Figure 1 (cartoon, helix red, strand yellow):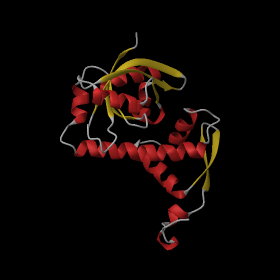
Figure 2 (cartoon, one colour):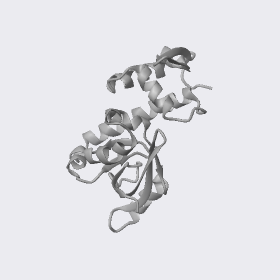
Figure 3 (cartoon, helix red, strand yellow):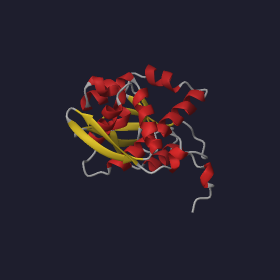
Figure 4 (cartoon, one colour):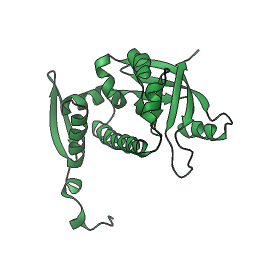
Length: 208
C-alpha cells in the first residue's frame, strides 16, 4: 500500500501505461510505457540530438529480441538519470575529471556500479569504439555499449582499497551489435569515501 496520499501523486506518475507506435525505415514498434517514461525518453533524445524513434530503435536493436522492450526502456531512463547525476557530482567536485581524461594518451573510461560508461576520452573512442561501431554512433555509445567485467565491480573496488599501489587490474569486454573488444583494465577509485559506491576510473591496454 502506498504511503503517499493519492492527491499528492503527480498525474504523470499515477497514469496507466500509454501505447505508442514508433516507426523507422518501414519498421514499426508498439510499446506501452507510463507517461513519465515517455517524457524522459523525449528529454534523452533531445539531449542526444536525435529523434525519439531513432533512440528507441537503437536501444531495442542493440539488445536481444527476447528482452521486454518496456522494461528495457524504463531501465535505460533510470541509468541515464544516474549517469547525469554522477556527471553533475563530478563537475561539482574540485577534481577536473574531464581534463584528466582528455590529457591521458591511453584509452580510459569512467565506469559506474551499473557497468555503464559515464565518460571517456578521445583515445577510448578511437581505440575501443572504433572497433565496435561507426564514428557517427560514438556520441550515443553509452546507450548501446554493454560491459562485462571478469571480476565484479564490488570486488574490483575492494581490491583498489586494499592495494598499496592504489589500483587493481581485471579483464573487461565491451560489446555492441555482436562485436567485442577485450582489454585489461587498471582500475582506480574516483572517491575512497566508504559512504558511497564511487565510480571506477579505468585505463586500458589490449588483452594478451
